[in-house]
Length: 288
Picture 1: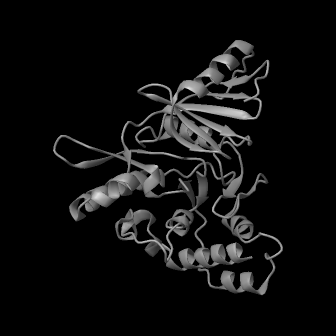
Picture 2: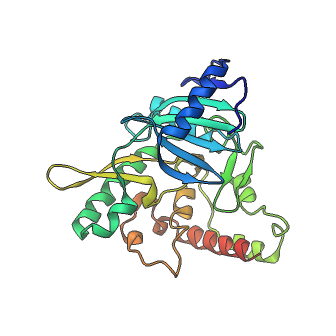
Picture 3: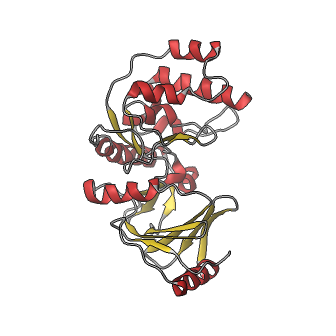
């Protein structure tokens, strides 16, 4: 990693900026020495700093959606088990977000060993969490990231815009605006199948799947949901959006019964037409 003579440190209030080359050296050493919990060459690495803290290192973009989201939740909905923000540092083309570490396992890892009663118990816990999350509706000025980062649909090749989108109708235009297919007969046909959308925008995680749900086992052997992680696609989105995006990785080639135990408040059955149209549009874009 190239070291620069300065860095920008953004505190948990997303405010003050500090300058100093010595901290850059310390951070670089931390990246080299800390345990790596996750790593993807083109995206970054998650470092375990200590028993309570991780550093999520991301390369190559300046999107602060995840950090501003967990700041917002810590202030407005502290009962939601999201990581707590502990500072953000940016230097060169790298940013490091410091946040709470959940010393537990992902639901994805635990799922193969769960019995039906365990799955039923786990189903109710995130349902309660997402019911609370969806009660947050923002101030109605814009959709997308809580700090005005814009809207995105990362399930479609980083489809995003920083233009202000303030209505559900504008968002639907954005969803189907992947050129050169946005005006195609196929898109017009798909959109004709959509039911009228509610005007409500609710706080949305945007990537609900077992890999992003943390669980632990208590002394009685019961599985408990301890945290929801990876808020980088979160923000205020149409009421249907979470249900339309859930199971986006589920295909004919994957055998899993996770679909039977989805939190009811965000299950596709709530908006089946939108879920099906979303999958058809995803498939069409992939084929194109």
